[in-house]
Length: 545
Image 1: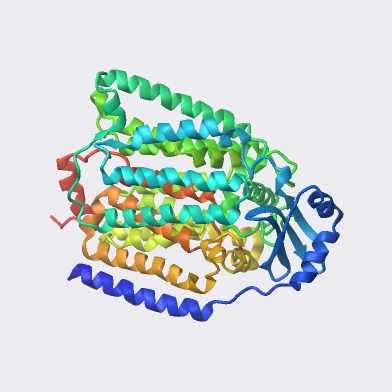
Image 2: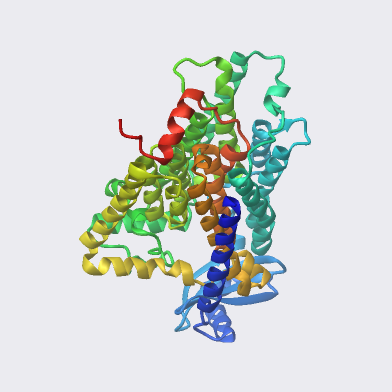
């Protein structure tokens, strides 16, 4: 009956959210007629010179906002160039892709030899024997997410997005079932690495895996920090952080080299402000090497978190007990899109670290909720997890979590008001609103031409959050399993990625540590005494003496 009521409320939320989404749905109008925008784009000398060297046979015009539209020139399914044209007919930005070696990030990270090598290492760390196991299907689905990277490298933008949909949808369902299912029926299996090294003793395996982990870390440092092609997101964040250092809010005051660079919550800029003090960034010609270093550190921190989640929390451990943690950490770092993401300097890798440690600290509601709130004020998506975080808590633990959420939010609002005055909050809302209204051809909905169905996809994610929160509220013992929480977090985030207006493979960094923890590793079992002692405390205050 508990499950039925949760399902009923989820269905009700789906219907209400779907109806509301359909009623609120509106398309961004084109500032210019398509023919006019195409003509103005072709008149620009830089665009004309760039396109003259490459064949194109089709063109599409889509809105960016009420003042700007995107003109995309294509050759077959390959995009040749994207031109941003203002309402007045002038060209704001032009990208001729065939002149670019890679979309963004370090070109080394795209090399086929490196991609294949990392994939094989990922499979070695995550696959199991016998082969006919559901976990191997999880591994196969994850491996297929390299396809969007390769397709985007060759400018097949639409195919890149469509190639990711089956794996994202499959992993979302798998994580949802892992989080809210019965949890029984674990299949007997042996990690592929252990099977192939059956003749080695545990210390030998540990030594080899430690060497591989150190080598991977060095690869991340060398490729990530030396990257010469950071993504525009990190330039926007660093420019906004530099504005904050000088006492100016980014919203409405950003330079024009990054379109809508002020569309992120305030902590996206504030957390990089210390770096902006020593390495300010005012244009895309300035160095963002420090931000590249932060992305690398965040990736390594995620690996450390996965190691910690898969190794027993004891001072003295047998050598073999480290194997699960080492395999999980290596699997995360061997996931090929991660190296590319780190080499772009994108803030998505730092968000991944925040989410990973929010899950790791789940048994400390104040600390975990503090990190979750910071993640929400850093990127909006984690706010969707708040109902799930609060649902199973009771008493003082609930109030501690709520207090942490309120405290971080109050601090963020203080920064807004302190720097921007009473209009700072409305300025941020106006800047962030672009994420919900922009026109973009880079979503499954636009690629398939089914934008009218997008509100139903968004309603389904809301239904998942509502149903999961109700289930955790009524069966709080489910939340005592950190792996279930990681799986549910991943399911919600994957749903958000599928339902969003814009998708890029950089967003895979959000969920992969959680997917590895939930589906492809062997998390350390909590000691029975600790499990018995902590489970009641998760949901209620101790009874008075």
